[in-house]
Length: 98
Image (tube, rainbow, N blue to C red; front, side):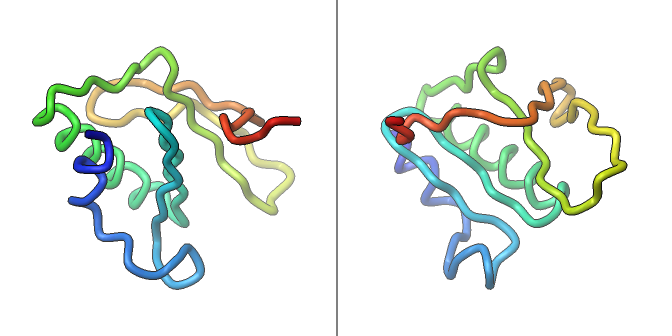
């Protein structure tokens, strides 16, 4: 079912040629985006499409991570569609079996 929700997101190409990319496994999804605007738009689209299929995104497990070369940047939680998501410095992706 999750795959059906992701089909509504234009993901042709890869992150070097697009502004966004998805990595998904079972019920876990990572949205990779070059800009915060693309991240928010992709998340909102995924959320709407998932809801149409009866799927609910667990907002307690949803995190936000920003990777940048800037060293003096203060990172803040992100707000998308009226909900705040926690910023993290690292996360363990489900496929990481180390």
